[in-house]
Image (cartoon, helix red, strand yellow):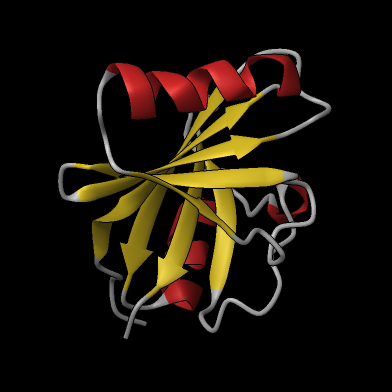
Amino acid sequence: MSKPAFTAGLNIAMKIPKAQYEATVAFYRDTLGFEVKEEDVGYAPTVSATHAVKFGPNTLWLDRVDNYSSPDLWLQLGTDDLDAATEELAAIGVHPIDEVEPLENLGSRTHWIKNPAGIVHLLAESR
């Protein structure tokens, strides 16, 4: 099996507790003046609301997660071969943690992983 290629993704997700959500959306929209758009979140049953923020070339997703007590930051990685990438990561003790946020009907193959510091990454295959 060949070595998979990894790339940085364009999506960053900020998981925000319900009590801090509206003020955080207002910060990016009203204080900073960024383009902020509410989006459908039906594909992620653990997220109760989401807004997309145009963050330079990236999209910053502000996700309301009602059972969180503190915010969390999640990143996206791409790979050309999800199976090879999963195998390579498993060899160093990094295993899929897809239970953190089940995703439905994305149209691409993905796994959630954590880096050694505990930061969640969506690993998405792009062929």
